[in-house]
Length: 490
Picture 1 (spheres, rainbow, N blue to C red):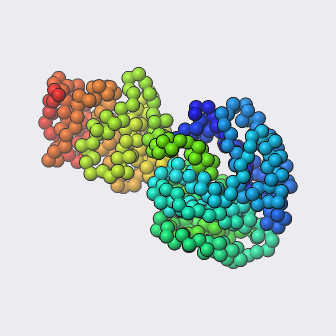
Picture 2: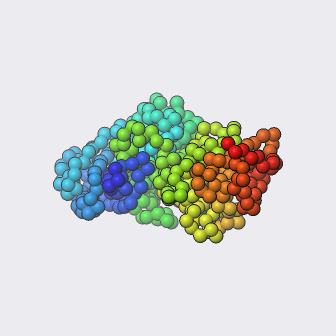
Picture 3: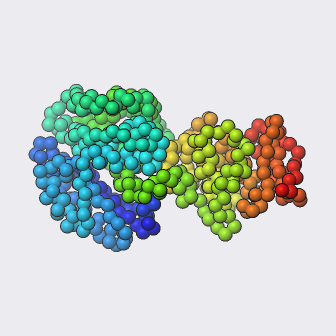
């Protein structure tokens, strides 16, 4: 599970190789490359793969093979999607592709593609609830998810390249909208998922998200977990879809990708009109991550990705081994009314308590906040990332004036502000009073009664000016009065 694993995704528009650091609950990509072969270009008219695309794809696969061999990947998962399963010469191409790659390639059906894409979303967002939509070059896959459980799914022949070909053939936007609407109207389970979330997977939609981030000066340009109210996403799509058939170069987006954004925007408009979601969530996790997730034992899939990601980011040393549950118990008196979702976030923050411990004290707060906010292994929505970053900012004595804190605070929802300050102050006190030793921390405790905060310590407990100052900070953050020091030899 610790050796690299390769996933090859042969799509209708692009073909991609991603190397991950192993088959694990939170795999991290260590290498990512693609070839824009456009195998599906003109497929609707000719019924065959694009000749120039075949040549590009076979050349790219030979290069992929050299990389896979050079990195000594333990396993190769190679998948082919819409274009190769539809084209008359799809099987012939797969035969040549397998020879170049040196590994078998599985041509997956549309329903399986929808399933794996949804599994990718669920792997990062286990409470996903709504509709997963994966827009590729040759098809649109839709899957229902309820509380992280996969439901109905379907594949529709309305990919970005398909719509581009129609525009080049003379179809206007009205005809294209009608085609998309005809396909969506036949899905009887879509209305049952109204007022939930719409999860968007695919490169064209990622480009659309990037355009909105750039235009709004968004402080965290990470696609995974970026969300917009459905009405805002609809307006963005409306502004971009008129360029169908006459695409212009979009700032910050490659010329090839710019061509697929207008059809993606047009599909998104019709999806929002039919699904009626309350929120649109962009996912960087899809088919490839779903294939990896699907290959894991069920016991590993059941692990919370937030906790697994926090464990990956957290340092280990001889003084402090993982004592997350001890910190959860120690800080619990401050959070007696928290929900299960809030406890989940608190547990992740407790796991990350020492993420910047080995840095210079003057920059610990800044580095901890930035590291958590940008952590590749923490696949959380942006508000949850901001909460974790804010906790670590306060854990290391930072404030709103700390460099980088403004980005954190801009993303932090108001209801999470006070809990982040309280937990950060509590973890800062815990580190000081215990010298980061679980055995010493176990000898102390917090008690909240009648609006007062008491610190329980053993006889001749570890008190000094630093402990007193941090205890006062915690009381202030919690809105509590400081009670008398309680000696508890037990």
